[in-house]
Image 1: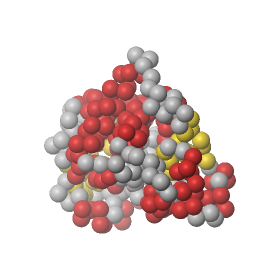
Image 2 (image 1 turned 135 degrees about the vertical axis):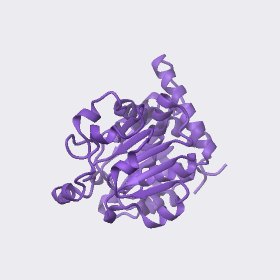
Image 3 (image 1 turned 90 degrees about the vertical axis):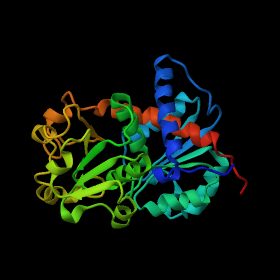
Image 4 (image 1 turned 180 degrees about the horizontal axis):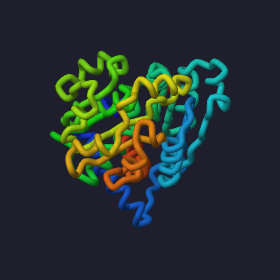
Length: 307
């Protein structure tokens, strides 16, 4: 066996994604029954977070603990990465001490470099280009509430950002239709649009995207790295707020998701995010279960290689 990394949903096959989602649902039930695994007994996971986090950090640290392991959190000021040590050197050292590396960073090339030199699994906890762990939780949540997502219509409303990119990869991996409504200058990555062309539809009209959708998804318009553009972005994305009127054109039993943090009154109204169609709390909780299933899969299907 070689080392398996998870930098993108494309690092898994369709069957592997389905297997991880199924296992996540099982692990959720096991936790509710107070059944715990010793998968990571006497092992450590290193969490390198160069960007702030709530759900990703807590879910990974909690998951490792529930696997009887230990997590070590490194902020930029906590390691020599923040002082200019090459990522390759850090990867080699950490691989000698830990069984797993989770990295949350800006440029996607940084996590690719980490995986290139690590001899243990590396997990993308978020990069500027994508956020695949979020999608495992999102697909788990849809599956629990509505069953198989294959062939369904999903609407993405707002910015063509890293989460949107992961939804695009999910669409081609799991064979559903993703209708993306963004302002013209905020569309997703052009190369990814080409790669996912069979499963996505682009529009500038949120109502066209949301019509008859089984799921409506959005995200903050001013994510990490865009905080200073908040006022300008609110003007650009005017009309892209997911409100009750927009949800009314979706399917009657449509779900609403948001990866959080959410800003009520901006990208979504309080009535929608706190309403009956919203499954955001299940979605947030499922970060824990989906990531535990991912960790189990990667550790089970990887063999630490000598340096």
